[in-house]
Length: 243
Image 1 (cartoon, rainbow, N blue to C red):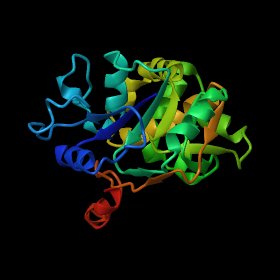
Image 2: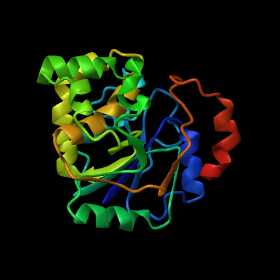
Image 3: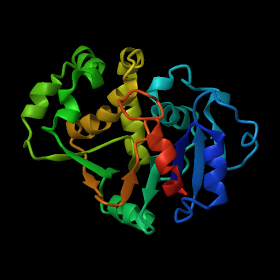
Image 4: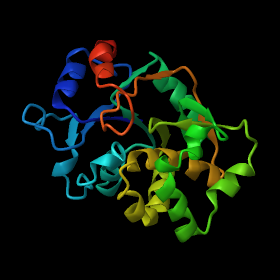
C-alpha cells in the first residue's frame, strides 16, 4: 500500500516530516501541487513535484488534488495494489492503514471516509459545484445524473471530499472514465468540487463495492483553493492540530 499526501506549501511538508505526521502509514509520499517555492523539498526522496513531471495539468490549479491524482496515474508512479489519496489537512486514526487493508482485502474497490446521503443538497443539489460534470455525463455517456440519483434509496450514503483509498485497478478505471469529460470540467472555477463529486458518481454508476470508514479521518477543510466561503483564519486557528 502506498499513501500519497497532496499539499501545496513546502513549509507544510517540512513541518509534517519534522513531527512524523502520517508515521502510522508504512509508505508515505508527499505530492506537491501548484506554483509555490520548492527549493527546500525538491531533492527529498519522499516528495513528488508535480510540475516537474513529464505529464502534469498544473496549469489548472482549481482542480486541486485531482492534478496530483492525474500526475501519479499518467506518469505511472503507483507501484502498489492499494493506494491512499489524502489531502494534507486531515488527521487519521492510529490504526487506519490496517482497517483500509482489511476493507480492500474484503473485496471493496473503494474506501471513503466522510459520509453524505445521496439526496443531500451538497452532493448534486448545488449546481455551481457540479454543472460541468452533469453536462459532460450527458454528452459523453448519455447519462442523466439527476434521474439516476433519484432512482437510488434517498438515504444511501456516499463519501465526499477527495480523501479516498482504492485499488490501483479502480483508479485506472476511474481515470479512464473521467478523462473524456475533463476538458469540460477543468474550465470550471469550481472544478475541484466537480471532481470530488465525480468519485462517488463513478462508483455508483459502475456499481462498485465500497465502504465508508466513518470517524477514522478528521478533515479540516481549510479551503486552500479559496472556492468556498470559509475564512482564512480557519487555517491559522487550526493548523497546530495537524501537527
